[in-house]
Amino acid sequence: MIRKLKSGEYRLYSRKVNPKTGKRRNLGTFRTRAAAEKHEREVQYFKRH
View 1 (tube, rainbow, N blue to C red):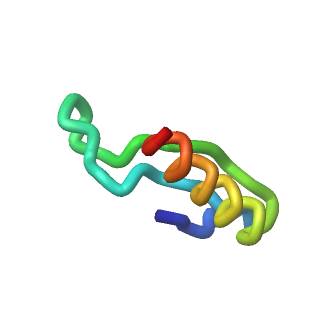
View 2 (cartoon, rainbow, N blue to C red; view 1 turned 90 degrees about the vertical axis):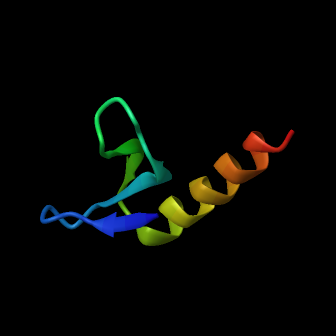
């Protein structure tokens, strides 16, 4: 899940809510949306291998 920040950067959040905090886990901040989407695909791949 990618959200745009006020600073203009994009942050990747986990899809599930972290039960400890009740919020989504930050999986990284990126300058471009394309970079965030690329990393999101890498994360999904890693989770299954």
